[in-house]
Amino acid sequence: MRSEQEVNRALDEYADTVQRICFTHLKNEFETEDIFQEVFIKYMMYKGTFESKEHEKAWIIRVTINSCKDLIKNFFRGNTVPIDTITNLCVGEKADYSDVWQTVLELPVKYRDVIYLHYYEQYSVPEISSILSMKENTVYSILSRGRSRLEERLKGEGYGK
Image 1: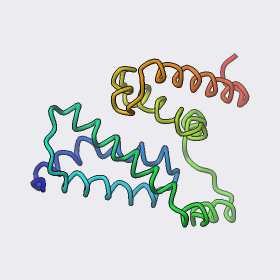
Image 2: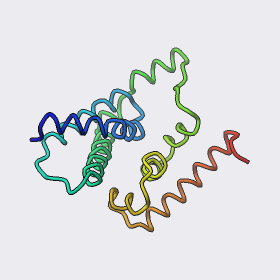
Image 3: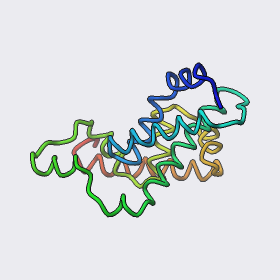
Image 4: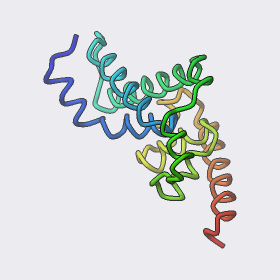
């Protein structure tokens, strides 16, 4: 088990990254909070050692993505409606994100992960390849296709040429 000092340091360093990844996958504030807690509990309980800060961050990202995928697969999640969705429908409020970020969130998960890691976290393709356990050429292909889909959708909303 990790010390309180180690966990607090990891929280300071990776909290924003974990929250953004969770929200990218789940699009729900409450589920994001649940996975956030789960990730840092797993970090606290992890008995292994990390070779470097990059290895630690990659581990946290991988655990976050896997936890989100596990939650998405959960039967009850697919058969319920989040309360904020009902509130938005009844009150008519709109989400407060930029159009571009909203468009990224609407992409399929495989594009969303790669685009998020590349553009928001500033990872290179070889680093993304390592984090997601994919071949580099696959990451390049997904990144290219994701950019194309993003561009098409944004043009449809009046952005670009």
